[in-house]
Amino acid sequence: MAIVTVGIGLAKNVFAVHGINEFSKPQLVEPSVSRAKLPKLISQLPPCTIAMEACSGAHYWARQFQAMGHTVKLIAPKFVSPYRMGGKCGKNDAADAAAICEAATRPQMRFVAVKTIDQMSMLFNHRARQGQVQMKVALINRIRGLLHEMGIIYPKGASAAKLTAYVNSILEELPAPMQITFSHLLTQLQSVCEQIDFFAEQIAFLAKDNIQTQQLMKLPGIGVLTATALVATIGNGSQFTCGRQLAAFLGLVPRQNSSGGKARLGRITKGGDNYLTFPSFFTCNQRESSCYQHLLSFC
Image (cartoon, rainbow, N blue to C red; front, side, top):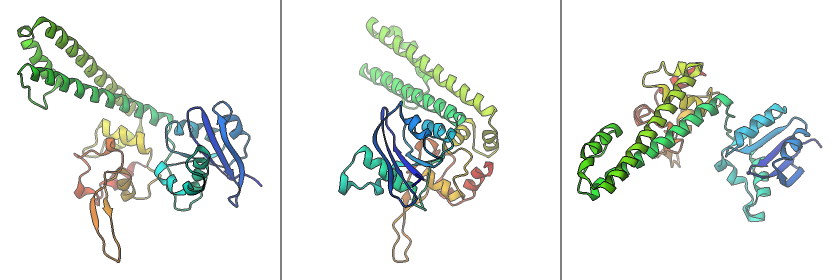
């Protein structure tokens, strides 16, 4: 019988493929498929539904399989785990592929939208900028820590420019070996700050040609970084039917422990992408408000 659903366990070099028919009977079981042979294997299948975990490389393969005429569904790994038959066969690639295939057939399953090249371009710049920001914070703390060893207490929260000016002002008072060390660290800090500005400019450039980003930036409190991060992560928002679903995706809804007709709401879960959760815009008292509906207005 024809294969209607295929589950693929993604990896770097070796993939597991599990295909079933309309009666959920296995028709294609390949526990070890090399990276070079995977496109050929999938291209030989009739148009069907291909499911994968939303992990590294998933969006690349999703676009490849969509170009072959298949319907691709990406599933968050935490939603696949309950369907893995660990008690029978344990944890392995073949069991993962079967679990993905099983999860994709569930009527209430939630899927991850496939990212386009434009979304990936925005997201790459955000991730690169985020890494440079973390490096900047680490360098500032390292310089402050070294100053502390010399009995110089520099306050927290100061900008890189102020810290650089301060260190340069006292540089001559330090021993020659320390001057060389601090000069090298300040040069590195300046380079990191320039990289942050470069990626910010790239993000702003990409935002100019994106209609969804421009629409989001019309909302109060939404700037270039927030708008591009939202578009790069959620796309056009078509996977959400209401604003509360977007709030739940961001982890900005209370954790529920309700039973017996009694509603017990806990703290905000913060279970979503922390990079998207901006406290200055998304606040606890807004989680039920219409701000999420406004975010979906660009769909």
